[in-house]
Length: 422
Ligand SMILES: Cc1cc2nc3c(=O)[nH]c(=O)nc-3n(C[C@H](O)[C@H](O)[C@H](O)COP(=O)(O)OP(=O)(O)OC[C@H]3O[C@@H](n4cnc5c(N)ncnc54)[C@H](O)[C@@H]3O)c2cc1C
Image 1 (tube, rainbow, N blue to C red):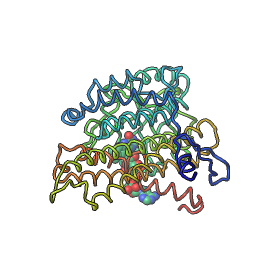
Image 2 (tube, rainbow, N blue to C red; image 1 turned 90 degrees about the vertical axis):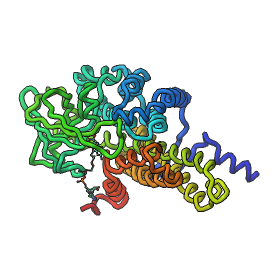
Image 3 (cartoon, rainbow, N blue to C red; image 1 turned 180 degrees about the vertical axis):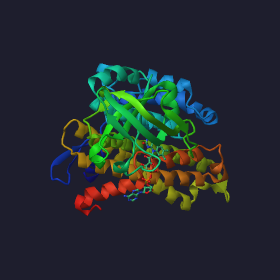
């Protein structure tokens, strides 16, 4: 009897009815739909066939192979969040997370996952808040993977502190005249080569801090002075800076309302954070699986090293943490979808859950990959070992789209209340 009750409790489609901190009943339902399972299956087949075998070459060439970019476009995975009326799939956050997970399992360097997550999170924001004119002119190309959308928030002197940023735009009769100096920006080379542009954070009222912040779509053009940065990992991806002084963009490129950009930019960051949580967890789970295969073969002191309890306990801890991180990643994306559809969660719930998901997943993934590398001895430290690539790639996620410390600031703010924030 008891056994049946326990089995029933563990049944995968079981729905857990809980109360959230506001006392409202919420149904946490993580069951993937039939359509989502089909998308996962085709994403897995594509990623294992078209991405996994090319990662080594990508690292040597320091560029995502053109065949991977065109394949992702063919599968409709680039710009998959773009609404169907513009040619996209109109994918929700959970479905985007499923594809992100499969890409991360195939590319441990984080290069292709980053192209995927940045493009999808920020084209979603553009689809939601862009003007009709901008959406009609841009989104069909984004949905076909012919153009990429990036995010340009960070500057040489300010990253976390968005309110202090210096880039600005003068409002003119026809639109805006942009003076921007942005740094540490992902995808700069890809956007220059493929086309597309950036959701760009600028001041449109320089005396008003965050209340004078607007978002503009700044397309790549020859007037952007682009430079590149060498980074620790993500060999296939690109990273750099751009400057422009007086670049004109039309009124139609304003995303959301004038001076209200600070309110909506977080919807882009939050989407990206949930995707990063799933990507980091998938990368770490992959590393753990690689290490397990190695530990079952490698012998020391007359037996397989997988039989040493000293390693088993560390393995068990990492398996448990990464399972929890993956669940939290999907929970955060699911809450994002509910809130976006007006189905019972608030913006505060989203901020807190995304921050928790990104914090635990990226921190634990870095530690788990480091352990997986350790269990593979000297081979783990070699450039030949995928855990060496993964460790450097996942390290980027402790900074990009909001640092580890800023995730803690958000969790503390949503737990203690705004009045306890300095
Ligand atoms: C690989 C990579 C890719 C990136 N891609 C992009 C991109 O595409 N677009 C883009 O706009 N930016 C991008 N960034 C920049 C990223 O968003 C910033 O690095 C991040 O927001 C932190 O800003 P910062 O580097 O200026 O550090 P700062 O804000 O100067 O912070 C320095 C340190 O102080 C900590 N800190 C800051 N404020 C607080 C606080 N209140 N309490 C406690 N600690 C605090 C930070 O966590 C950090 O450890 C990328 C960064 C990396 C590493």
